[in-house]
Image (cartoon, rainbow, N blue to C red; front, side, top):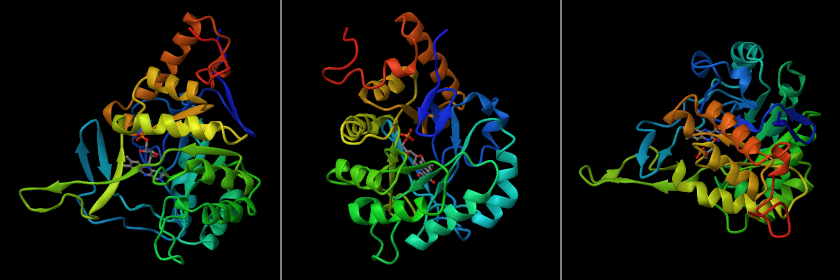
Length: 309
Ligand SMILES: Cc1cc2nc3c(=O)[nH]c(=O)nc-3n(C[C@H](O)[C@H](O)[C@H](O)COP(=O)(O)O)c2cc1C
């Protein structure tokens, strides 16, 4: 029997496959497809202090080996989340990680404080890809100082494990990773979507109602793997990798680059049960190669580590 469990700081998961934020909502629809207690954890759609209607349609568009989305953080807001969604989520049987998004540091602090008191929240994932209203709309995640301030604001309000989710739309991801680690992040997840755009040549207009959107899916996997490789070498906290994972070999790529766990996002749209096949595929790989567990492959592709073949 191989050991699929992973430790992300204080957070222990039964296996390394998490469901990425925004791709399974609050679990209601995917909970009808399979038993969600089988995944390592579910990360919720971003929760904001106030309800958000999201962006005007069209909001999604399929691209070669990927998709663009500009949902605009549509969610019912903190109060309705705690009242209507969390009671359902805590019955699912898997750890629930709540993704939080704010327009300034105070909003991150407010979200962390309220979620800290709520039963059934295993950890917080701080989404720093959203526009910073006070600094003129630039995302917190593209600047080490503001990424650090947001992390510290959430950290100060909760004893829950805090993971910070990095944006790939930066020049040096390592500097941002080090900044959030120093500000108290227990783990770092990456990557969020890459900023992209598509034009409808018949209408002669941008396809998305929001004009630009986030690119996800297999097209971005090499970027994600490269960034996980860089960040894992730069910080001491666990790294959770994502971007374009559709099957077990893709997950293993991330683990071997240095991720302690992975998330499946767009893959859920291709096949809702993909996470289960990925868990099983990782198990088979470990068994075939007579490895004791997931930890034996984490970072094994790095020079000077692991068993090379
Ligand atoms: C439709 C959609 C909605 C998303 N919503 C969120 C969100 O609310 N918060 C967040 O941190 N990431 C969000 N993401 C980003 C994903 O969690 C993930 O980081 C990204 O899609 C890359 O992984 P993938 O290629 O496996 O999809 C969203 C992605 C998609 C496709």
